[in-house]
Each structure stands twice: as structure tokens, then as C-alpha cells.
Image (cartoon, rainbow, N blue to C red; front, side):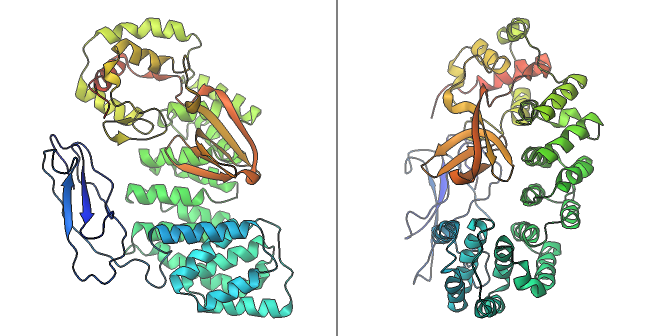
Length: 479
């Protein structure tokens, strides 16, 4: 659907099934895919309405095309659709976290009579949530029953049971099925006729059952310019679930074949483990990776990395390639502040914003949620906007400081502290991906004096600074 001139927001609503509706599309957009999952019950006809904000008070034009109705939750599907599937996944995950060794065999045995999609969702939650080294004491009868469960499960759930056995330290339970399961998953991954989402899910499952260098390299080899951007980023996120050091070197080796979006995702993944981050720094030092491919936020994450030796090496490389921020922020501001008095090119500034800022900031309905929303910031003087870009740590709101979570497995995730509860912490990383941690799985949670917006934007050309400030200043009102 596309909403144009004057429309405050358009959405598709499935008639007679309120509140079954898609997220709103705001502003003038290119073709944008929207979808919604619903239960049609006994209905045999559905009406699809395109509505404008304010229930008809807004004006505009909208188009929709390629409407497709797909049955959700069919046997063998990856999970249950919508809120039901999410609830089952969460409940089974929490159940598994308690390591219920006395009841797990009976629970798994019950899956033999369960609907296929329900069995997949429960098996997924159990495999993801079960703590390491908390194995049940299995009698010969238990082992026989679990092997019976394995044979009865749909193919999409068998690898989850294999992962669960591995977490128990009992990979031998289903060792005879490993080759067949891996072959089935690999067939889905290699099948170009399959939807990208299904192939990405297959890559994630393959890492789960066969986390070795050969598997990682074969998945990363599929990331090339011929593949769509969502597929590329999905595969990178899939290998990000690996636990082996070879991931960093494999991503660096593939770097020059990655598109800008994939490079950004790869850099973000490599920050998660010290060995991977070391490969990223080495790639920069050896010029296998062009220093211009890394965003300022990635450089900041590397140079402030929790591993002191790695951070020191990153700062040395940063200085050598000319990306080190100038120490004197006041001098930088004084040098460029005159640009705020010059008239910039709005269209050129839009391109600068989309390349450097949009991943973190939302402006007029487009962009990320990592940093503060900029809609309406044009009400402020252009000089204030430019100063905030050049000296972002002059005044940092508490919610936009940089936090780093270190897991018990040795992973590091940095970003904005999004939400927290008694048991969980949510961080939003620099690419806008949300990470939820159980507090019991965290070794440390630390906050930096720096904000999530990095220093170093003075490395842009003066005309780029002038133009992006001009573009941002066109947004005068908060909506």
C-alpha cells in the first residue's frame, strides 16, 4: 500500500475481524509489504478495507496489489501463528529454564499426540530455554521413550529435540538421526524455490545441530550480491548463534561480497564475541575491510570494547586509518558551526541522512528506534542540531546512554537499555535489533559515560553536514 500527499496514515483492515489490522503506513512511500495473521473462524468471505487516519478526515491516495491469503499454522509449520504461537514459545521456554528433570520425559512424550505445529512451538521453547549441564537421569525406559518421541515428531521439531539432548550432554541419545536431520535441513536451505524466511530458519536450525566451521563457512558462502538483502542479513544473524571462533574470520573473508546492509549486520554480529571482534579489527588493520564500511557507532563500540587489549588495538587501528575522533569537541564545533548559517540542499541531505542516521533515528515515520526521534526537531535552531551531531556527549539523556550486557557464555551486546523487568533486560543494538536477556544469564550489565550516538561525524564532508542539517530542519512539527 502507498499513502501519499496529505495522508496521515493508511492501514489495511480485515472486515468483521477488528482489531485485525496492519501497522499504519505514513507519508509518501514506495511499495511497502504489510501483513496480518487472523483467525477467520466460520467466515467464507473477507473484506479488505484501506482506511486513512482519523477515520476519513485525512485525504490522500493509496494503492494495494498482490494480495495473498496464506493458511497459517498448517501441520509442519515452523510455529503457531500470531499471539498463540508466541505465548506457547514463552511458556515452554520458561518451563525449560527451571530444568524440570523430573517431568521432562513425560512432557516430551505428550508431544506424540499433539498437533504438529504445537509440537514444533513447544520443542522450540524447550530447546532454547533449557540451561546447560542440567541433565535428567534417564533410565533405559526413558531413553527408549525419547527415541520413540523423536520418530513421531514432525521434521521441523526433530532438530529441536537433538539440540535439547546436546544441552543435556547426551548427544548420543539421537546420534543415529543426526545425519538425516542435517540432510533435511540442508535441503531446505539450498532450495531457492523456498521463501527466504524459511531458508533463513533452516540456516539457524543447521547451526543448532551442526555448529562447526564447515557449516558456518557454507552458510556464509551463500551471502552474495545475488541474494536479496533480507536473506543476506538473515543468514548473518543465523551464524551469529554459533559458538565457534571461525565465524569472525569467515565473515571477514566474505566481506567484499557483502552489500552495505549486510556489512552493517556482519559488523554488529562480530561485536558479540571477543574472538569475532578481534577478527574485525584484524581485517581493518590488514585493509581486508575498508574503514569506510564501518559506521561511527561500530568504531565507538570497538574502541570502547570491554576487552581492554582489544579496545587498545582498535584505537591504534582507528588512528592509523584516520577515523579517530578529534579530542577537542569545542574546537570541532567552532570549526563547523558556520555551516548552520548556510542554505543546504534538502534532497542531498536526505541521502546523507538515509546513509548515516536513519538506522538509529526516526524522522517523519521512517527510521530506527535506537536514538531519539527527530520528527519536529526543525523547530530548534539549525545551530543546535549541528552541535548535537558534532558533540553528541555534551548532553546525554539517561535512556540513551550506551549499555553493555555480558552473558555467562562470554557474549557482549551493546546498545540502548530499552526495557527491564524483575527477570529480564532488553537492549536495542545499533542496527535496531532487540535482544532479551534473562538476568540469571548475565555476568555483567554496565553503562558507559558515552551516549549511543558516536562522535566522529566531522569526518563527513562540510557540504554533507550542511545538507543533512538542512534536511532534518524541514521537520517542524511533532506528530
